Every structure is written in structure tokens, then in C-alpha cells.
Length: 151
Image 1 (cartoon, rainbow, N blue to C red):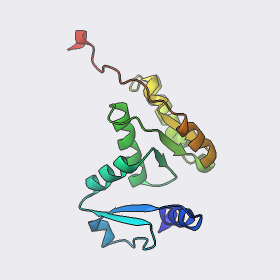
Image 2 (image 1 turned 135 degrees about the horizontal axis):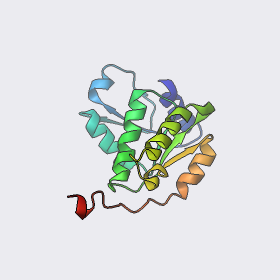
Image 3 (image 1 turned 90 degrees about the vertical axis):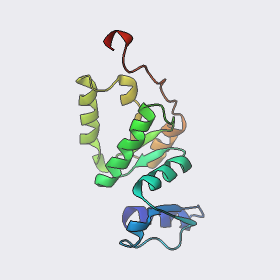
């Protein structure tokens, strides 16, 4: 259903493999795509996100709502903490994410984010450009968060 369903169907139509991961509670409330290459049903949203993260080579947020933003910021935070080194990208279709990018820039300017962490968010307007940059992504070293003098 929606953008995710259309994307999955396009992948399948072009001969690709599309995997869906859905918690059982949502499976009962939503219509799952029945033609996927694989449909994984989990017991919780947390298990769903863990399964997605373990299978992914990187993470892309396309225009979406709160769930999209929550999942994107969670994997971005995991990257910031050094729990994975996978690229995190925003597909900025028609400037959809521009205000979010502006906010991230402000967070950096105000000192709540290191420049290396701001650069972890890859933003492009087209899928090809985004995938090209994600393919070249090199994660920053994980910094020491608190200096000894501040403890």
C-alpha cells in the first residue's frame, strides 16, 4: 500500500527482490503486499526494526510521515553511536526534506551535533545521485563523547 507498496511492486516488475518486514499487530490492521519475494512477520516494532537493520546495506528515507522520520533518526543515531557504519540518506523529492535539512544545520550550528555527524546525513534529489553517494560513504570515526576533564 502507499509509496512502499508501489516501490516494492516496481522492484518486482523490474525483476528485483522485494522483502517486507511487518509486525504481527500491523499485519492484522493493514493489507500486506502478498506478492513479495519474502514477507517476514515479527512480534513487535522493535523486532521489525532490528530485522530491517540487520538485512540492510544502508537506509533511505523517502517522503513520509512520523514512522519514516522515527525510523530514519533511530538508524542515524545508531550510526552516530558506532553501532553500524551503514549510510543514511534522505531522498529529497521536490524539496520535501529541505526544512529538516535546515533544522539539522541549525542543530549543528547551535552545538548540539558534531560536524562529522551532520555529514552522515546524505541528501540528494534523485535516487541515482543518492545511491551513488551512499555507495561511496565512509563512516566517521566514533568520537569520545565526554572528555575526562568533564567527568
